[in-house]
Length: 386
Image (cartoon, rainbow, N blue to C red; front, top):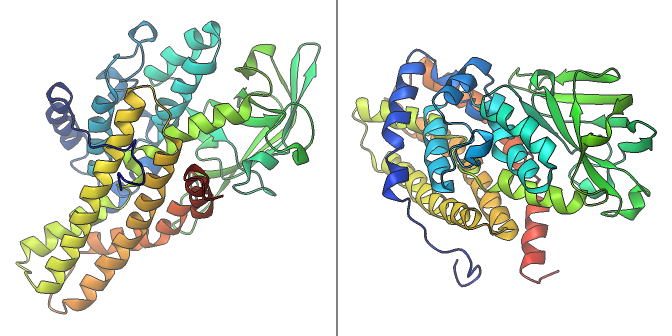
């Protein structure tokens, strides 16, 4: 892999950051002791504002953000440790996830001093939850074709259009929206900007969309002549494509692109171990999970190291996201096969419920953060193949 991606080198978690693992694990064991596995399997789709604020009270939101804005000023490795433990435990992190992962870094990099002072401390305290307004009904993953438009007015901006597949819009306070501020959809990357939308403003309508698993975290958001203040603009007008590309690197590179099925895997492994199942078939599937996970974790750590150095691993993040998604979607297939190969093993109702949920939701893994086709297009361009 390094011969193809020379920038992707092995990275190790420093001892001072690894030391964070024990207190986080103890906190999670206490908080999640009685939560069923099929609920924990939702993890970063699980919304619990009180849990997010409890993390904030521990100082574990905004770990990498500057101390002047309430963050801990720690390295990306500390955040990696925290995320691993949260995902492995199946913690309900969806409330703060987007704001902590990408909105705060985006505002710190491109926002005005006033935006940094207002939004970032609220994010760190778990008081401001954000959603992402990128996809639209007629454009899918082709973000350059967005039609939602913000037009200049005497008092700021007037926003009209719609966004779809907007996770937790109905529970969020704000949206970072990619909009067109000039030109037409045919202009592609030109004329795109990002704005912060207060979702309580008049003219904003939010409609939850239920998925096959019965969850309603996806939403359609309608903007009907929503008046925004001039300071809603993030960065320079017309720089939205550059900004959203930088933002997506944070979205695509983390361990959530590797660990979405990990609660299922851990539950299955614990039960076959307790039942004394040691067949070659079970050991082979366990080995596949462990082997793939070890490689993907190493790659994700390498991307975290690049981000920690202030670099922009767009290509490397796309590789991790594509391979990680494939692994996450294959885990429930492997475990389903394993159950069929062991007729004398009786899985618990909890394991069966968890497997059923992950099977239902796993097709979406290759949609969120960009489809597999989009990822492979980014990889091809990065390698000079197109």
